[in-house]
Length: 479
Image (cartoon, rainbow, N blue to C red; front, side, top):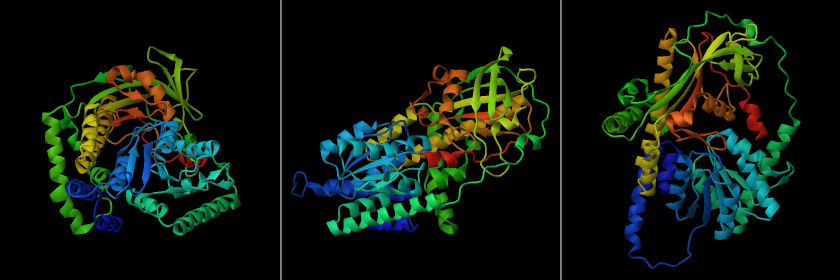
C-alpha cells in the first residue's frame, strides 16, 4: 500500500485502482490474521473521522477511512452530518490521537473552526486534520489561530487527499522530536500566511457602471404554464446523450492526471465498459429513480435581487433572491439579466427546477462501502452523481424548447457555486416548487439536498447570460 500510495501521488495510478488495492489488502490481512497472535489495544493510532454537521457528502471521508484503516490505524467513523459535540465526545471517549473533518462546501466548512474554539473552551488538545473540496491550505492556516492570534498548539493540518492525510498521521505518531518539528513547521507557515494577509494593501472597491447598462434585452418568451409541475416515469435512456464524459471520467472516476496513450487505454478497457454496464443496470433495475419538479414564475430584476411574483397575480411579490455581484470583471449579477419591474409588476420570467435520482442508489452505495467493496462504491457514486447532472441538463433542454429558445440560449445556475453561492436560498426554491412533497427531496439544516444525487437550479433565458464567480472568495475568507 505504501508503493500504491507513492504511485498515486506521482500520477501513475488513478484513485479507483488504489481502492482496488485496498480491497485486496483487506482480504489478504483478514486471511493472515487467523495465523497471528492478537494483542488487544495495539494500534498505530486512533482517529475520529466525520463529515461535519449539515454536510451530506461523504465520498472523500470514506476514502480517508479506507486508506487509514488499511495502514494500521483504528478509525472511528461517525458518518456524515455529525454535530461537533458528538465528534469531541467520541474523541474523549476513545482517547483519540487526532480528529479528521471533511466538508464539501464553503457553508459547511465553517464548522471546522468551531472544533478549534470548542477544544480551547473545554481544555482539549486533539490535533485536527481537515480536507474536502470546500477548503484549501490557506483556509486551514487561517483557522489555526484562536481569536486570530494564538496558534492552536496541538496543530491544525490540511490534507489535499487521503494519502496526505496518512502522511500527516504518520508524522503525528512519530518520535516526539520529529512530531514537534512537524507541528512547529506548520505553525511557522500559518504565522507567515497570516502576517502576509495583514500587510496586504486593501482591496479597491469597484466604481464602474453596472452590467445592466451594457445588456440588450430581447422579447420575453411566453411561459407554457405558470407554477410547478412534477415529472415522473422518466426513461433513463434519455439521459445518456447528456452525460458529461469528461466530468465523469476525469473528476468523478479519478482520471484527471492520466494523459496520452495511457488515458486512451483506461477509457477503452475500464471506463467505457463500466459506464455501459451501469447504464444497462439502470435500464433494467430501479437503482436510479429519476424525478423532477420544475416550473415557470413571473419575475423581475431590481438592483441585486431577482423578484418572484405570484403565478396567478403578477403584481404580488412572493419571494426574492438577493444575488451577489461579481467582484471584478464586468461586475455582473444574475438580477441584471432580468428586466426591471414595470409599474410594480413582473416584466420577465425565470424557471426553477429540482431533479433527483432518488434514495435507492444512496442506500446501495452505503451497502457496498460497508461490505468493503470500495471501488464499486466509488464508481457507482460517480455514475449516480453524473446521472443527476445529466437529468438537470435534459430538463434544461426541455425548458429551452418549451420557451421556444435557441439551443444554446440562456444558462442554468446551481446554488453553492459561481454566481449564486448562498445555499440558504434552496429554502425559497423548495417552498415555491413544494419539492419535498413533489419528489421526496429534503434540505439539511445547512440547506444541502438529500438525497445527495440531486441538484437545484434557476434558469435565466437572457441570451447574454454567462457563468461567473461572485462573492465566493469573500465568503471563504469570512469562513
